[in-house]
Length: 477
Image 1 (spheres, one colour):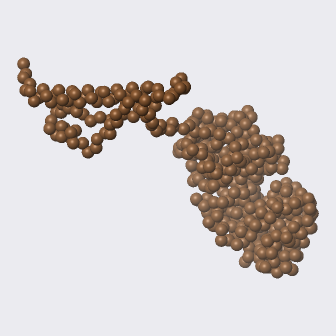
Image 2 (cartoon, one colour):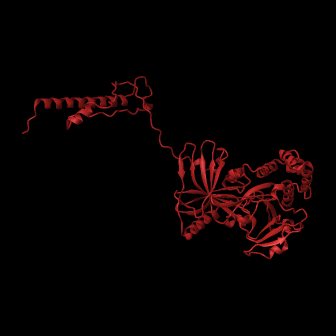
Image 3 (cartoon, one colour):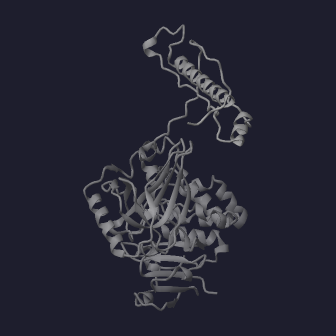
């Protein structure tokens, strides 16, 4: 039988006493925290505060001298309070983890949240994502053949929102980021579907509410098997044909919100390229002035003479030249279409000589804009090699084949054949952004409303915008 000397017994007895003290302190804390304090009458509504219990150091016995030294001479010691029944103990509760506020996804709330387009990012070829959420919002947006949303005549084709299931894969052309005034944000992906069925498909990829809680609906995934993408598109189109979860009319209360989903007239990503380009900034100013014009007055030139744009033109070209150019809108005078496309090109050629455009004022236009195309170019239909025809005034016509973006120049006049009259406009610039080649185009009356527009053609939409058989009128040099 082992023997224990007296000093060891005393040490053990002391340590047990300390341990007992600790138990008492803990018990006092628990009693104090679970007893209704004096003065609280509504006992049934009283909520016990959560006790704060400081960690206690060991009081022994210690396995060795080093452990005893460390515990008897700690670097810090817990602060112990003498607690009595009736003492008020307050604690700071940790905020519970917030759930994502789904209302930020509701398109009808975007105006209230003051959502605006913050950025557009073109994705590299082959960029694809797969849905990982139980439900992911996807919008189907009805388009004209030109890939514009036609807000004048599209009332019978609403925007549809559907919920796509997990494991659906899509190729993404463009990422759009929306930002709200309270920190809300939404990332949208324009799906590559070659604008089939005359629709644009936009996927909600992630969102963040005003509390900073983020919900991610997709993950990037390289998809090499095209059949996977095709299968996802088939399922999606099936959901759209059924009518979708919600519908929004393009001319309804959510018209501006629909523009946040998709618009060819968003070119903020070109800001660094065009911010110091005085010609393009002047075109933007002219476009904005048209938005202020009251078409019921049926006198566009008179209105333009009241604007700062007119003063700019007079300073650059002289009043005589400007007044002569402003006679052009009177040639074809339709109240709801204040400036026809051919008239716009003629005016711009006179007022912006720095673009070095070919003069088309003497060209025949009995069949509208498409009459501008030399007949010989039509014989080059779908040929890969360019065909060139001389114009009446020394310029040249190029086309009859899918002219690539690289071949366009600033100041080129593009002409679209088809329909009753065709269409024409001009090239303001050519750029490369995130590996995508782009054209900044300008025209008037594109949507049969007489308005001036600036918009972007890229490698994915140029066939729809300018046609597969494309034509250029250029000043020879």
